[in-house]
Length: 213
Image 1 (cartoon, rainbow, N blue to C red):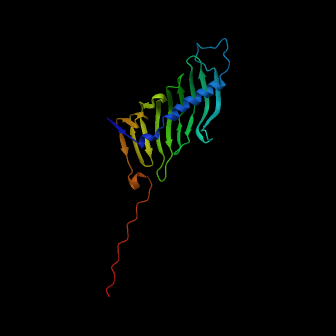
Image 2: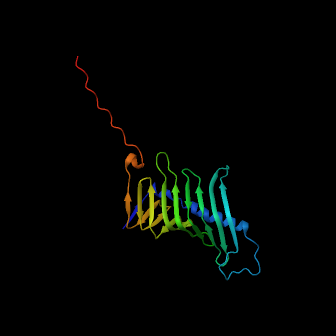
């Protein structure tokens, strides 16, 4: 059994910012690539360089901050031209802001496949009286060019006291459709239109009888 949903739930996961993880990491790699030595060690899976505690920021043409990437380290491996980023924190600064975190991100040589591994969280900030929406899973495979994301392990999406979970996930950014693979379970808080923690409406006072004259 599976369940699918359209916007606004599907707007939780802007796959474009995972593509930015690939793009920003590729830019950093090119900017810091050391000269090629005669003995480059390409037969072994050893990093040819490591960058620690780095931040990359991207601004628009008017100087407004668009995206930020923080990470504990980045390792590049010349044998397969892959990159591993430890403790990535990728922020999309548009409203509402979205933050993606994981223990590790693995990128192939062309950035067409990004693997987010270990305590993966996508947090979309709340708007108005609505609480933040959080997607959590142990692994997420993202294909930025195709705007697709998949997971074959349990996935949970929570907003305040409302939550839904499934055995896997398929997200298509082009069609704005999420598919949660079964078994699917959900609890929805309908108070104040789904806003958790909202105070119940006060009953209107009953009209008092008027005295006879």
